[in-house]
Image (tube, rainbow, N blue to C red; front, side):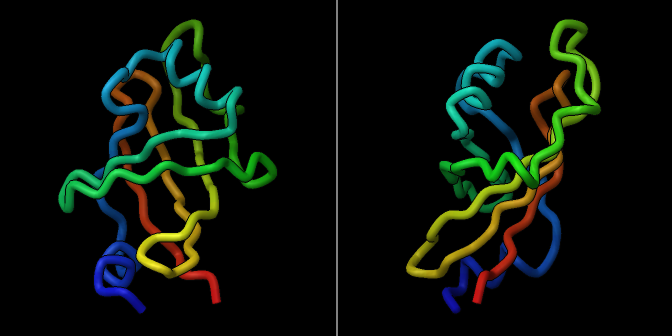
Length: 104
């Protein structure tokens, strides 16, 4: 397993969604396209994540009022390792917690 993948799989990290355009409208467009950007702030690792909508949860978010949280999950390849990116993001701040999960 790659060292970065191992590190991002060990615990949750502070993440930011939708960098550089952190607006709610831009996030909604990204969700409609099934593709979001997640930045792991501590490592500077920015990932493009194709959403697995069956595993995502948008029901706790109110996009009009800019409140609540969204739960993102999607699969990607990082440094030759297949991983699942899991992130919970606040609509108001576009920040939250996230981690990777190695897919074997």
